Image (tube, rainbow, N blue to C red; front, side):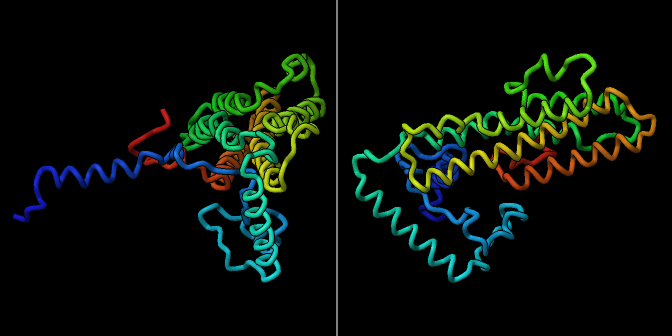
Length: 265
């Protein structure tokens, strides 16, 4: 028997795995990010990588990056490093906690998106579709509840056109809830921070517009439920495909799980 194969050595291997997993969901606090100078290729200015926007995150590639975009990226990288070096005291920084904002978007919406996906998946053929639509309505509403004028949205006799207009406004408020105030002149945003602001609003807009679309269609169905089950099934299938596309596009680590072993509930 090897002198290294002792109970201590065997336990050491397990300790390595455990230590490596400490920061799967939260970064090490000893490493300080400076988002105000964070350079990334996730920017519409790099048009040669536009195809990535239509693919799940794990399929994103840099093989199509053009020479012109490479030069643009290098120039920005050089400028950001120089700005960070010249700003050692943080005097040119806005003070916005971008890490907290990004985590707040995930924390507030991630579980509900997963719940909506679970509600729309594996529906038995004989399921009560009124219940299915009602549950989807509630999950979508949960993503928007804080931004809804309840009196207006649920007014007696509201028309489909009026409801659509109300939910369009809801989606707009929802999209800028974390960043709307950052346009104030008091904030001195770097170009990288402006990109982060647009990214947060872009992610929020996609989540909010999807949720408002599901909520609107669900409310319309419940107002005049079709006798033809095919109509309802088609709507539910569209919602399921939409939430799967949304989750694939976001690619958040919180959804990495083994469904057979770890159901949502």
